[in-house]
Length: 242
Length: 294
Image (cartoon, rainbow over all chains, first blue to last red; front, side):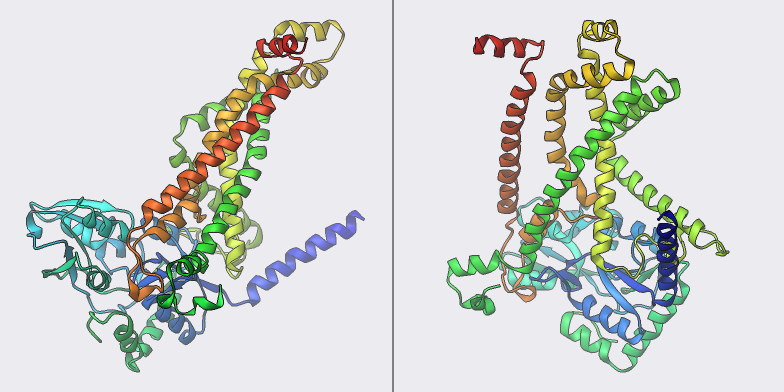
């Protein structure tokens, strides 16, 4: 009896190893799911948006099996590095600080200007400004003389802070703020914009050079046949085309 | 969900509400309620057994076991929950993967730590990279149960340790005088009597455990607070069929009612349990029960 049991266990274990080798690896795409139109959860609770369409298309072109995972913004880089998922696709601008910890693919959007959303005309230079923590916008406000930075964990809370008067304006990607300004009569975009950040790219582990190459080739092929521009037109009407 | 939900803009408010409350996203909220209840249902007994083991170890006559028990109680109780949750879960996950990596991929030449990256071979991934999402979620859930059990087990161990010492010493001496061994005294005299002293402390812990479940989100499990925040946030018409303003207040009000109702039910159940445990005990409560019956 014991022997049979042992053999079964041994068989099961070798089978497990064999399966792991023969199956193509599933690439897990990590996103925030709270930053429309880039990525958000639709009414069915599934990841949707520009990056959902883009990610699915990139995986198809790179012939990878992909799966979507949501993770909160604050810990999105640590969880990539420790291997909980393989790619960050979360509207993350390519910056030098982040590049020291992870690697970026080629940019799949041109730099999107950051805009201010406020309840009325204000001067951003001397105001209380809300931004999501760990973003290029938060870093930009921190470097502004005279402006006060209030940070929030989610994009949603930064907008709520302006509505309830906790902050005078929110600084975020224009593509994120434009639909909100459109839907809410009390809020408007200021004419002043900030050109920060260097376009959005996929984040991958520094040790994952091969995966990065595959995605770079897929991004390039989407740029070449214009399908990336189609997606940008559909989801990010404010953004520039390649 | 319902056939008339196809075009929400055309609906009257009652049917709109009905459709709104049955979107896939809301279903996730209802599932997460279940997740929380299951977590509590599994964690409570596991934490209690950790506590029992810890307390027994802490009063053991064998010195290393005693040191282990006391260190466990002191260490885990002293570290802030959030720090423990963040550190322990990542460390535990990496430790499991590291061991599997050593066992399953002996001929792997690259280092596991490459700069910031933690890289193990595919077969050592836990769960395996190609496993469906629900396996990842279940794995995360059980890591959460284990973490909760370790944290709350330390507090329970301290409560039980105190309760074991509160059992009148004369009882233990009498047991010894009757010729019972240490083991017999422990199981037949000490353990049955200690619960009545332990219950007030344990019921406290249970209440704290109920309220600590939102920490689940730190561990990557999407709990009710996460979904309440996600659903309550204002929604612009371009990205949803059910646009609305900032409704977080209402969702959090719902959570408040849920947690209050839950703790109230727990209180009633714990009161009953206390009455049963007090029965026949040599405590003030047991004495009062005896007099009332007479």
